[in-house]
Image 1 (cartoon, rainbow, N blue to C red):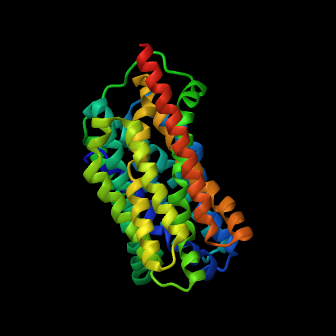
Image 2 (cartoon, rainbow, N blue to C red):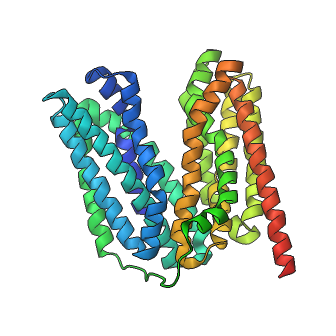
Length: 383
């Protein structure tokens, strides 16, 4: 936890402004809804583009260096956010420029901080604890977002956007000092795999992750509109049910990956997730939808660490930071692409159909994992 705590800080700094920036830019600053959306999404573009670079820094220079640079970038994003809050009226374009710069720097900080923290923990504790480190990293990610979003709303309402900047600076700055005081792990020297080779080895596992994550992405993006179309209340509780079972499964069953292997656990998890998405598609009441969300969260929980363990096995230890960065990119891609693709499905067939779309994607992920597992057994038998 002393390593994955840096991931918690990164995603807390992401969560704090997440729920307030669209309204702030559109309603308070008077810019278009499109620009408000750009202010939010540009951070994820920066994260997507910098993930492989962050992995290479972790491999070649050291995971501690990557974390320190990540914490410094998150601190700088807080400074830029504070400047945007102070200067949003003189002139108006200056405030939005500082906001965009803050989001770009935060995206780079996310890549460096989370990738470096994961590799730092794996290297310090040993490869046999890879699944545990990745799983706790995920708990810190979702826990920080769940805490940061409502906390940021309260802070902005009480003390203004500047307070979010000040808290980001304080928390990330303290984490930078904490990282500097921690013992580094040795960099594994030797020839590193070229990026294209790492991508080729990780891609099948990443595709399974991306397709398996569509259930979560669809739920997070469209559950509010789905509930509204059915005239139901409690869409937020549906997301809460997903989050509670997600975290519970990670804490209670993470040891199953070491015991049974990454592929068998992933197969079971995707089957459970499919059942949850199926319930959402067939839901005749909000209670049934909530049960489906809870089941989907329970199933999806171990997909990332279980497939991640299998992905890094195919890469030499000295290139595992790059592999983790590339692997995580597929989760980012899944979230980016679900919005427009699932939105097109909704436009053609209605809100309910989006869960059938998710079910097909999760079933495709299950097929990929079964093929990978069969290939792995053949290789093991031949050896």
